[in-house]
Length: 253
Image 1: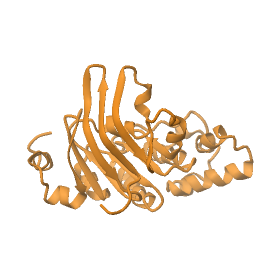
Image 2 (image 1 turned 90 degrees about the horizontal axis):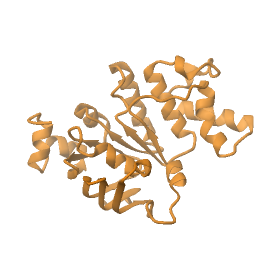
Image 3 (image 1 turned 120 degrees about the vertical axis):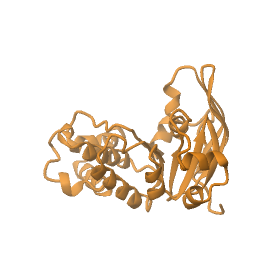
């Protein structure tokens, strides 16, 4: 890979208490691409993605060794600010989790926290974020209604808009479609394809067809190890590792 990576892990290990969940992960994530993490349940996919924006910091007895570099900066260095890291590396969770507020206030929330008070500026941020999340046309006439009245798929796109509102560089998505129906899933997949023009997207998915459809690169994980990482077409059509081939062909997992 000659292109400069946006995220790079070097000998990354993670323990929850006595249990080691990640073992010597070395990988480079390229900008403006979609990278999918696949593998059986419990293989470390979600644990790894949560390392990228220091979400594991809040888990008691979690210990990390090794390095994660974001634009060349070690995000686990003693002087690194976890809040700043999370501004640049946003997260969308498995289950849509809108705040019990209006659609407008959900999207404006992060900007308000950052001290933006101008209504004109907030209006611009809300509209731009909802447009980038392919939701504006569906909600522009009901911005001050509760976000809880949206469908599941709309709620997930609202959560994506909320993460876009603070202008991250990377968006992490932890199984963003697992709670959605096929139509809502297709909308999120279309949205991802558009997002990579401006953002880097890393997605955890248990759906191999989804990984094959949407991603540029795929990482296959098993028992906390990164077994194989490469171009998605190569991983699915000509995997180098027997473990990868067995998983992709449905022999286990």
